[in-house]
Length: 280
Image (cartoon, rainbow, N blue to C red; front, side, top):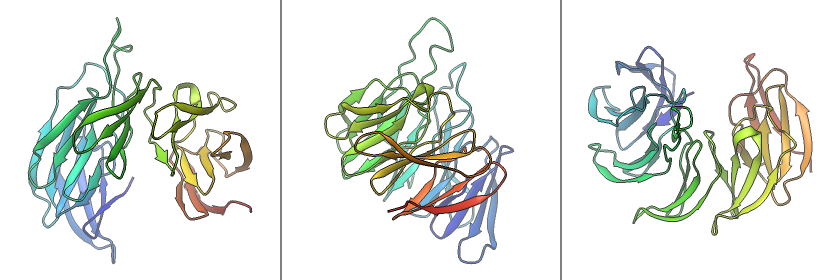
């Protein structure tokens, strides 16, 4: 996907290219070579572009000329999920997950590790059982960071102190979304959960969409949207967890819907982009 930062649209390739275009006119700004596959959208801020790559690395680039400013590498597990979580740039720091189950807070200017928390626990007899990648993009509300690890848990962390506030043993490798009260998660088997943001307790779970290969959830008004492998977009009541509507968008939906106000946009694998609005 496409990331953004400092007036640049940012994209990466599996061949290791990072492409920066001026958002104002689409003209090329620079092209860099990170020498590793770019497995999630780059993000930018404070004149630094942050790129998650294969090899369990996070690389900081100059947004001005595309030269490498710093790189940070973690040990790579023998077996890992395909992909990386998108980094989250907040002011002068970046939150990023790694394939070895860690979430890190890193200073944008120089790549300094400010803290790290183990979210995923590599436990089990086989390499598959020990998969514990943090592939969900972190979410931050005020000073609380919400994150998740595959085959492990959802966790809330106090950002200033790195103290764990709560954990809920739900496994996911998809992005999360939040509203004023709840954190929304699509867990293993495509069960959709609402978790209380303060206590971490499960408020409801919706299991009528099992094994439909759901997208990450997206909040729109008082509903949650999830797409599926058959091209349907489902609207779930955010308070009750009941499915209250669905529509066919065409072919398979893979990406998290984008929402603003009461409007949502989705893209299917045929390349169609659909804008829709929830009925009153």
